Image (cartoon, rainbow, N blue to C red):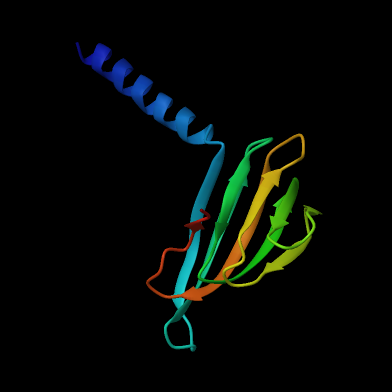
Length: 128
C-alpha cells in the first residue's frame, strides 16, 4: 500500500512540476523595496516567454526598464513603431503607456523588468 501511495505522490509532484515548467508566460518576482521617493517602490521581475507567446496589452503605474536576458522580443508601445530587441538590449517604457511584448524568436525568451511604481497599486494593469 505504501508503494502505491509513494508512486501516486511522485506522479502528482511530477505533474505539478511539468505543468509549472510548461507555462507559456511566467513572471518571477525578484525584488520589491521602498525607495526614497515617498509613495513609490522599486520592483524587479523576471518574465519568461515560451516561443510565440504574447504578453497582452497592459500598462504600469510607473516607469519600466526592460532588459532582454535571452531570445528575441518584439515590444509594441502605444504611439510608437514596434521595436525588436535581442539578448543584451534594453528599452524604457514611460509610466502609463500601454504596451505588449511578444517572443518572436525560435526558443525561449526572458526579460528582466525593473519598475519604479506607485506603491499599493497593481503592478500590471490590463488594457481595455
